Length: 240
Length: 240
DNA sequence: ACGCTTTCGCTACGACCCGTAGCGTAATGG
DNA sequence: CCATTACGCTACGGGTCGTAGCGAAAGCGT
Image 1: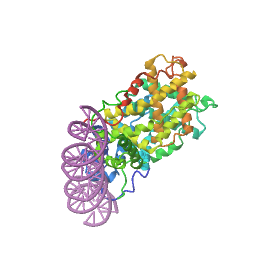
Image 2 (image 1 turned 180 degrees about the horizontal axis):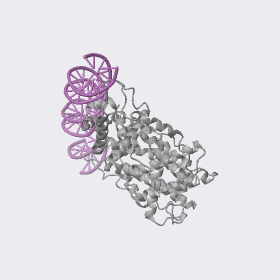
Image 3 (image 1 turned 30 degrees about the horizontal axis):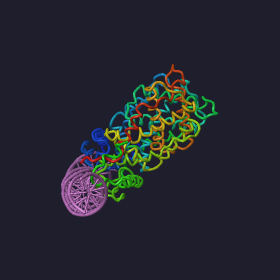
Image 4 (image 1 turned 90 degrees about the vertical axis):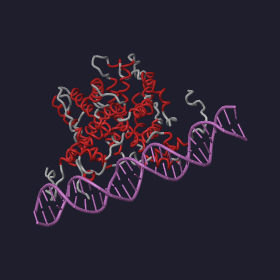
């Protein structure tokens, strides 16, 4: 909590307004031009900032777009609709709504593609977007347990695996539906998807294990360090 | 079947060997350089072809990479392991193995990202890759019905929706697991995923409908025109 | 064998974007 | 008031793009 005020460095401080303007300009450029035709010079012009200023804060296109897109997903909220199924449907619909926006569509997939050859970029995506949104799974599990819809989960490791599986299935299906199949993830689709997911989960997975003794679980584990690593976001520090 | 021999045009025919060399060179360049650093000039050099020859056949980087990656997925085969669950696990493992190759990782996601702003490119991806591989779902359904594991499906529209849902869930989850979570889709993971998917499907979706009267279904419908549209692949025709 | 047609390899070109260096100026903190 | 850092601006070499233009090569029909 102290690292948010870096030791009061001397000299002119960086303009926080410039950061916001640059990220907003990046999203605007993504909407109009898409990933491939987006140029940093153009973004700088849109933001009313010199190109050199942009390069002082971000290493390149990839890192800039990751941060610009990450802000979109912070809008996600877990609604309280009364039941686990309804809650999941609600958050999935929100996720689909974000993916329907052009700045998210082209930006997100592009950086994911780049991250396959850039470990640092992949880590940035994980801490800025993926792990950051696992809070929704945590909240959903806790709320469902409070309702008595889900049992407490003893095995932490098994539970962590299940949480990862849920995340991959939810995010993966919505992304594929929206971007590859290019069809809307509307209420009907989300209802059907949630039904399949929830039935498959509550009826357990591995044969030989009693149905209700697992399913959703701890979900915590490595997600804890994600919250700690969230500070790793934002523009790059001084390194020149 | 006649369109494969275009009306015996006059003049020097295009070198089929050049096509193969270019696509192979594209995959090699994807492995070494990734999407963003891949240049068409470099690909032409690798293939032993002039840059102009490359531009005569493909409109740009996007179309070229789509065709280069599409060939990878044609390797997919539906194994006969005795049960529907085992068959699914087998084909998902193959899919994961392809996504583990770097030329598929970086190439596929990049063109999907570009397709969000290019309808023609999205259509090319659909006919060359997505719809093309739905044959696996068709084969799997037919085989499972022959075994008596799945009932015949009367409602074509409902069945088609279910087939799309399955495809989005399978492909989406594997892609997300492999590229975003950056963890291997190994046998353990595939087993757990298949269990959840299959349980959710066989126990039906909508309440009020008897469990075994739906689940997997016709799966056909629009997939038929995919097979017909498969000829749309390959280099572009003469247009300049 | 002879044209006609189309493709191929090669070179060259203007246009654009990249990422950085250099400079003078503005804004803080000690 | 001075050291320090950020900012805007200009300019630059290097690389890629996509196309034009040329002569040569390779088929097809007669």
